[in-house]
Image (cartoon, rainbow, N blue to C red; front, side, top):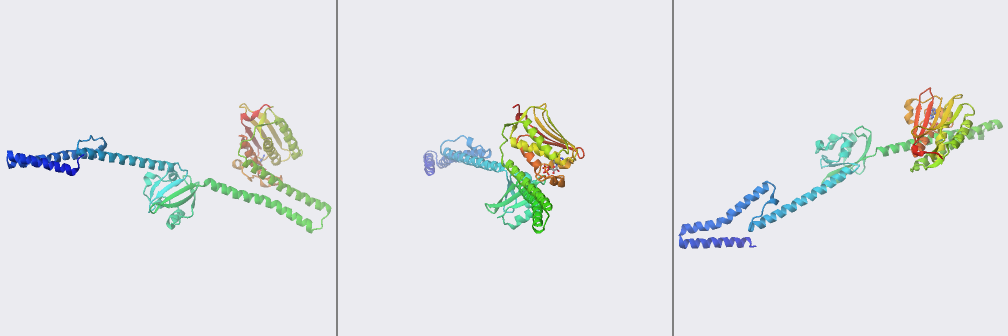
Length: 433
Ligand code: ADP
């Protein structure tokens, strides 16, 4: 390949030779014309190639342009290679960008990118949902015009982002608790990370309620017990009076014991995340035990009927099944006034599901209480529950045991018409032996 200077030199030489030859043959005018003609050939060629280049640049088809020969071939070839490399780089940067966007979109957290004036540069769909934003509509809008909660506006204004900010009652239905924090990046930009902490907040509130409830439940019998102890210590009591006090103390101690036992049962059930085992629970034996316990608890004050309609047994954890069944039976006895009737039945329905039913003629429960009955310490009739030794944890235990056996707890009750509590077990937990 000849260099540009050499080419230039060659053209000038050829033009001069042509001019000299023409001069000696045809005279000055022809010599000048021949020189100009020779020099303008590469200029015309260059013009034609530049025009082609312009056409391909305008049509963005430089890579498809056919290469001319000679000097322009190299120029066009290098230009095409440059364009191809640039396009490839742009494509790979775009791909990287798309991957980042996909990763940010896949995040369970809301992400908002803010510029130095807190204008939204980008946000993912979770942030759109959390704050009711629409990225296409709200892009480059100042975020404090769109999220107008005073605590959030203040947080942005203060520019102290070391601590996160908790925003409650957020989201489309106003039921989300969001924890957000701004992190500086780039040139005075901020990345706003938003986490849905609704469940954590709920769990925290439940934990606080639980501790308060347990303390409250324990404080009453302890206070009563201490009162009796003081009385026995300070007063000179007769033997029969003393016995009476000891009985009362015993019943308070018993109440605490039941509470601690139920709490331990619940804690065990909650910590055991595996489904219940599938050992055979002999229903006939279990029903006989329940009958004995029920008669002892009722002391003949109720008409209790036990019905075994199916010889089928249950596959599950015997201790848990016994605890769930006896909780339902003892509730029926404790809440049904004297002379009331109670029916306890075991059957298998037409779909092969096992059904344990406890039906009583007691006071019944108003519908607004039904969904909350299985909450820990939820009581409809507080005084009756306490008077009869209830801990407020019985149905919570039943519900946990039901879940571990994939069973449903179905409660039907109307005030004045008694209650029916049924545990319905799936077909694959029913066995012949
Ligand atoms: P408790 O130890 O107080 O009985 P449970 O969790 O077993 O706690 O029951 C929760 C509440 O449901 C009880 O306090 C009571 O008000 C109501 N309840 C449960 N079983 C019956 C029933 N058979 N009849 C009427 N009310 C009931």
